[in-house]
Length: 575
View 1 (cartoon, one colour):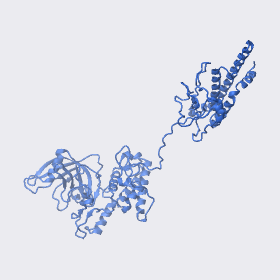
View 2: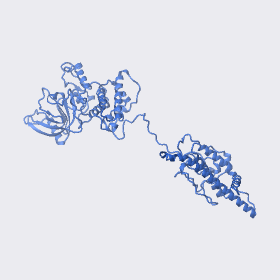
View 3: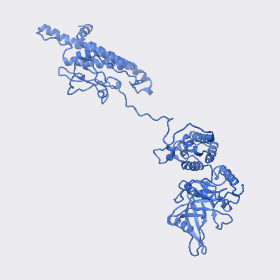
View 4: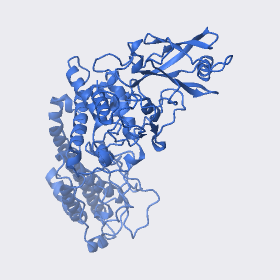
């Protein structure tokens, strides 16, 4: 019998499956219309193999009524069954050739371009637009009844090993209709190590010949958690640091309201923010000195911004206290980005001082804020020693080390240094506790200064206080001795009055110059119990901020304000 005759003889014998198979083809074509042609043909091949497996399991494509057959009739039926089997096998071979043809056509361009050698059958597939299978007619499904699973093995014939289409990345699951009891073992045709479980998500759907097509669909990868938008607010607290803005700042939300009274402050804050971003983007460069000096000027002007009650909101709007894009990115290398280790030491100190000032909710542009001014006339002393610090504004000075002070921090008067916790006594040059030692000391001068201190910058010969009780060492001297015994550093402050014997003294006021170790001391006057101490500045604090360069303190803005204070408040004469 010829091939055409065998194929034609097989067609009527498959009429009981023809309609359902064709319906399955149509739905598969609709589902895979946007995919490469070979994928759709591959699915058709799976359907044909399933039909062939069922044919082999049942022993015949269509059962005939039981009757007595002659030997000739039996031989005829046997030959007919062989013809059916061969026709199905040829149809499957043709389908395989068609799959391979389309598959090579798709993969051929990939070989020409090695960069795209990795082939993805789901390329261009949008899971949200993927069509779902249409429900079959319930009446038609009822007529078909339940059929054993596609993967079920039968004792009536040998089943060809299941073909795994791994490149399609999809799964054809076996599911009996609700009316049928599940088989003891219902293996599926796995296209992935683990088949998708769709039973809990979607109700069972009718299928051709009892086979469910609802699972023949693109297998979606788990949706990855999308990263936050670059424009979304960044967290002010990094997971790698304990630094963070104060609570009052984190409770504020960005506001678009602007006031004419604070427009200058708003503009300067934005300029400051933009300048930092520009320098970070450029990275360390030799020719960036002009841009860096502009940043210095902004940091020196910022403490005198007239923000008033609007200060907190202005800072929040400009994210000035945020770690990633606020002031910490200047003085904290964790947030410095490309400028890590490249910010000038004085710029870092000024940014840190401004950060601490604003974190303390201090938006007053008056250098004498927090003081009760006792004298306002022309007889006021330059150091305003008669003034007092308001209790609510005073910071404790009873701590070791720098605290929140920075190298070069400057005050117009000693009372201002007391207000910020740099020193603890408005009269004595040495401040501390008997059981701990000295926390701080300052070097002064003037007509009433009787101690021959020698200032060499990093090394200072500093004299303790003379005793007022013969035979007893003064309290201040005992404190510095304790520092030597316990190896405790002392905060060292220089006064402008020490300029007569120190080239490191500030031009005006008082300046904090870092921590000094008490390395030695000796008695120089037994009657006065006068001791001379050797103080050595600790390394790694940055240079002393004296001189007249852009890093000097007081800054140009501080000097101008100081002179204005003297003029308006009658503190001496304007220089």
